[in-house]
Image 1 (tube, helix red, strand yellow):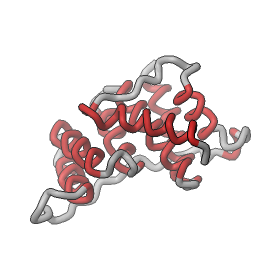
Image 2: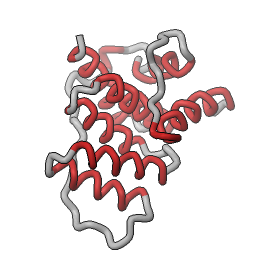
Image 3: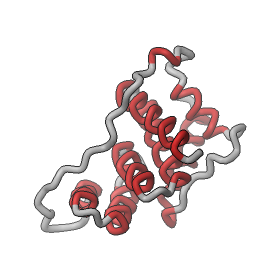
Length: 159
């Protein structure tokens, strides 16, 4: 992996963690947007991308004794999402992303879907695109394509 690619993705993810800001994807010529488009093009073969996607799932789990890891906060977020407490679910995912140093794409995907549920399409798209870029870096093709398809779906919903 070259340094400029790492810098671009790090800038994107740090923008989503520090102060819980969200990266801006409004400029289609930005390096981050270009990286996202390249990741979701399936090596130029759009037809190879699955036509359906699986939205993130939230699994009820017992609450952890200590809230000192990303996994613990993810559990809090999932439980809150299941109960319909989306505000607190998003806050828990914020903390989980912070503790994971922005390196867990599933957390961005889950938080992005919660933003979509709340009709906050800009934040949903920022998180889902961040997840797709991370999945791409991990060579996780199935989850990358799934997330790219979610982005396409959310983009169509906001029109």
